[in-house]
Length: 271
Image (tube, rainbow, N blue to C red; front, side, top):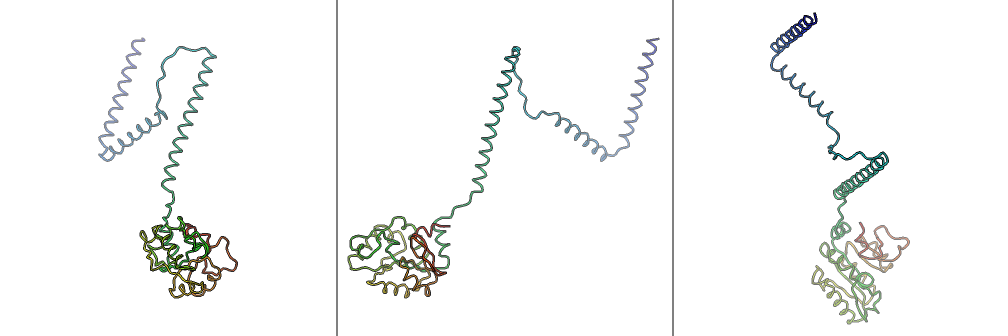
């Protein structure tokens, strides 16, 4: 009886298998190539998704087999390993974040303009500049000091050379004697203003009075004039388009076309 039941069960399995084989065969026989391709693509997508979901989040390393430690040492070892892993992961992430931030900072770091670009920007509407020497180009602040020596401020040389590349520059000063003129010209030559820049000695003008110096400025009709004397700045405000008043303190009642700075180089180094 048991053998008979087993034979009947096997026959039933075979009949069911044959039935499904015929049905599947008929199904594929009735499908066109487009339907078969769609089914194959769907099957591939299902298999790929299933494998992706089963893939572990990170590579698993096989740990070497070790002898089973005691409960106390096992707990201590596990805790220590966890701390090491967390610390290593923290250091690695911090290092990667730091490198990434450095790359971003380099890419988006604003480009710093050159001195020449700043000079051109400041004097964009001017092509002729007049400038006094005392207190601006020279360390000395009075004609009496020029009788002893003339010293060019080293920090202003680079600015002067940039101005001469872009503008027609004239330097002028009041002096008490011919020796003072020679000292000034020699100091400018030693600083390299004549040899390296566009300034020539004929554009360095001298007068014996402040009125004469003011007259020079008005005759040249510059776009910019640089001076330390507030009275001359006020007198020329109606005739000169722009002026730069070199003064340690901003004077009260400054005209709209008069700028104030502590030094010539400071004015042109501001962005």
